[in-house]
Image (cartoon, rainbow, N blue to C red; front, side, top):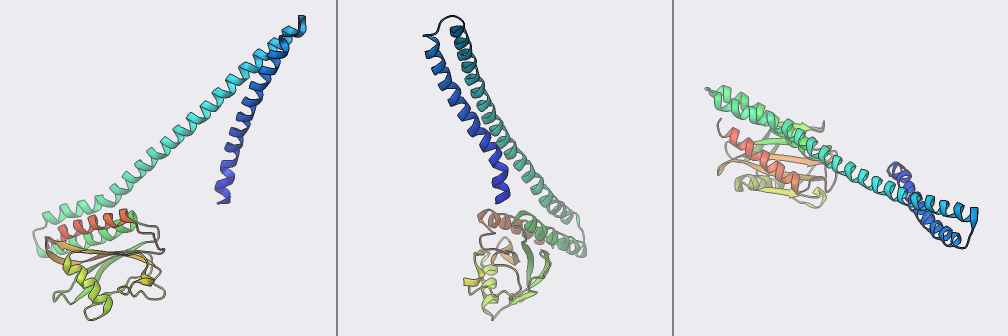
Length: 256
């Protein structure tokens, strides 16, 4: 915080100095002009010349202030343009592998080939979730067991600590996430410390989590999750991105 403030102070000081100089020059112009009216000879000439110089200085200072304002506006516009370009590059980098795997899936002629691509697609999706959400996030995909009584982790990405391996029916958190999957729904837990449906281990390293059902139409396939270290790390945009990626994953897995 100190660094950011100190970096702005010189620019702020320049603005103050220019404003003060403009006020002084304008006031001095008035005083000199008034005095020059009573002067005669060389003194009158000198005072009128000084008044003209001060008037010119007022104009020049005003022009400098206008230039600084325009430069700040151009800088802000460039920052916005650069941010937009960076976002587009990030989105393209995250989504390109997914679309490639979806295309590969359609070209596969065997079940083994489709299963291999499905694994690559799942990994690409969790990697995209990590890349497009909060710093320090972690994502995992859990496949719904054949008997619909559990979820087993297939892939994950993000923070180095592995997420839990499975959810099982008959436990509070297991029943909660299985209900989400069967309903084709999603859930956002802003603070796991106040939620009975999430039971992270003491060293899990996250306080907020989003879980989205992965479906093929009405058929439940699994659960895509993302968690992040701090409360508030995962906002509405992150939730919607995760839902879109879950839909892409479901479209691919439906072909296996």
